Structure formats: C-alpha cells, structure tokens
Amino acid sequence: MWVGRRRVTRLKNNQTQFWLCNILLVVLTVFSIFVPGQKNAEEQNAVAAFNQQETIGLSKTEKNSLTYSSPIRPELLQTAALSTKQVNSSALNDIQVYPGGQSIGVKLQTLGVLVVGHHLVKGHDGTTSPGEDAEINVGDVILKINGEPIKEMSDIKSYVENAGKSEKSLEITLKRGKETMDTSLQPVLDNQDNQYKIGLYIRDSAAGIGTMSFYDPISKKYGALGHIISDMDTKKPIEIDNGTIVNSSVTSIEKGNNGIPGEKQAKFSAEHDRIGTITKNSPYGIFGVLDEVITHEKYNKPLPVASSNEVKEGPAKILTVVKDEKIEEFDIEIVSSVPQKFPATKGMVIQITDPKLLKSTGGIVQGMSGSPIIQNDKIIGAVTHVFVNDPTSGYGVHIEWMLQDAGIIEAKPKEKAA
Image (cartoon, rainbow, N blue to C red; front, side, top):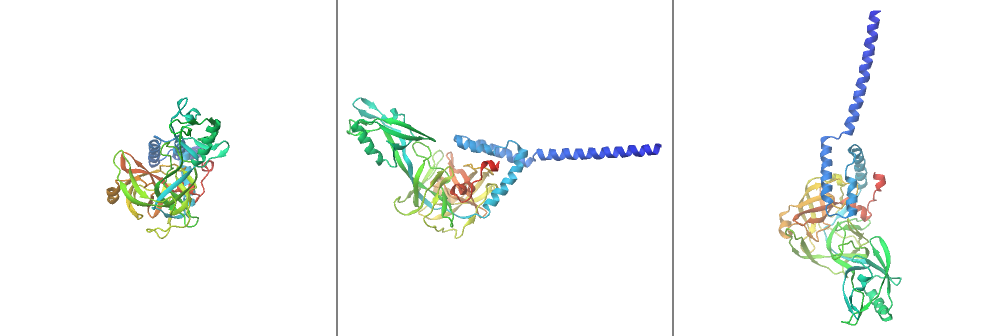
C-alpha cells in the first residue's frame, strides 16, 4: 500500500512539472513576441528621430502624412512591416524605367488667374486697392468673372474696362484652397493713366528649369523635379490647367555657398522643342506623357527600381547636366534612408562626394531637382531639396512615390495598408 501511494504521488508531481513547463514556455513565447529585439528598437528610434527632423517647417498635410510612420505599437508594427515589404517589393519587381538626368524647361499654365499681390489705385475719391477692399487675398485664384471662365490675364482686361465705364461691379468667383467663393469688385479709374484698374497683381503662367527623373518606354509616362512647383511670390503650390516640358541647355552654374543655394542657368524655348505634356503638379514632382520616347546617352536599356526598404546607407550615384545637354554621372553618399509604408516627400538624406561636381556646383543647386539617384544598378529616388546651410547635402524622395503619382504603379489605399 505504501509503495502504491508513492507511485501515485510521483505521477502527480510529474504531471505538475509538465504543466508548469508548458505554462512557462507559453509565457516566454508571448513575451518574446511583444518585446522587440535591440536592433528593431534602434531602427524605431532612428525612424522617430528622422520624422522629428522632417516635421520642422513642414505644412500640416506633410506632418499628417509623416505620423503614419511613427511606431505606436511595436509588436504590431513588426508584423505589418513584413507584409508591407512583401507588397511593395512584389509591386515593383516587374517595373523597369529609364533613368533621366536630362535638363528640361518647364512651363505651366495656371488654373484660372493667380493673385500674387495688391497695389494702390489713385482715383477721384482717394487712394485704394479695389481688390483688397473686395477681400481678395494673395494666393486666391480667379476662376470666373460674371459667370464666364477666366484662363488668361488678357481675358480680364475687357471685363474691367466695361464694368468701369458702366459703373457696375464685377462678380468674381474665387478658389481659395479647397473652397470656392464669390465676391464683388468695383474697378476704379486711375488718375495717372486714365485706365480702370482693380488693384491686383495677377499671373497666369510659370516657367523654370529642372531635371527629368525617369520615363517609361511603354506608356511614355515620366516624372521630374521630385517636388511640387510653387509660385515664387505666394509660395503656394500652383494648380495647373496644362503645361509642357521642353529640351533645355545649361549655359552656366552659379555655385552655392552657406546660406545661399546655387542655381543652374539654362536656355530653352517654351514655344519650340516640346518633348511632353504636364498633367500633374504634386508634392512628388511634375508628371505627364512624352510626345515620343527620348534617348539616354548613358543607359541604352531601362533599369529596375527599388522600394524604400531596399535603399542602403552608403555609396550611390546621381545623373544630371552641368554643361550644355550632356548627362554625367556623379558620386554621392546616402547618409540615411527611412523605409516608408506611406508616401512622404523626404525619405533620404544625401551628400555630394564627387570632387568634380563639388568643384563645378558647390553641391546641390536649383535646377538639379529631379536628378535620379542610382544604387546597386537600381533607381532608388530623385534629388529634391538642398540644405541651405550646407549645399553639399540635401533630401531625396523614394522612387516608388513618384511612380505612383505618374500612374505607372497603383497607389495602395491607406485603409488596406493599415
């Protein structure tokens, strides 16, 4: 009897140990899932620090877009990041486009007429600005006058003259941000030149130079600049009605110094040498369709593209023009790059290391925006901004966001990604 009890007790102890071991194993497994490793913690800290750096001076929209990459629950983020990488990589695996590097002239026709300033009119009853009195702000876009669409500055002159002579107010439809509103404006006769005026400085077009980033030989879609085009006076993004890109030739370089960005000087004809249309002006560049496939003097076949998580810190190259129309290859360093699950305009910090480029330009200069960045025989992005206090360094945008805005790959809905 005593021996039987001993065996029963030993069996109970073995069963207790078995269950305790199983419970401990489950606890350890759960703990290992919810506590990220040291490497992941370092990566998350780097992401948070980079985001904090980016939000300085950004618009509200850009700040909101960056909050998606801030890790809220690391244990869920790790799983989500894996699935995102698989989706991004598979979406980009079959994409091959030609790298750009060509200097291009850009001409945009605004949607409506853009108000860029106020001025005073000396009338019989004193000095006033009719446009300011009508509460028309700098940055507003005049869409219609008396119900008729306005496309060019020349469209406005006859309305102003007729309203002034008949002593009637102009009924103006404005676009302010995303809102559309109506106001009334009474032209005033200027005593100095005996003409009716509305006290507004207006603009209907913009022109400049930049660099082609990539183009697709099949669809003829292209991307350039890597950043949005804003009006030089209002500093607000230009809403375009249409636009064109043309061949451009670099004539000289004004080198950049600390506090003053450099600039490419180039010549082009907005009326001739057209090579494509502009259909979109977005935070990631300008996009449209080429009239015909252009040739590339350095690359006779397209290159694959890299997702943001494939970009590595270290050596890379950019393609750009510093003289005439010759595309050259220059060495740079990827100082930092953040894998992005959602579009953001500043994904990389880059530094010019090529002695030849530093000698000729001093670093990144205006007009270089859009220069494609190549690493490990893949297009990884484009140059976008220069650091004003250090012209050798600046930002780059990841290529996948430009491809989305170009319509070459489909944008992933945020709700599905989440």
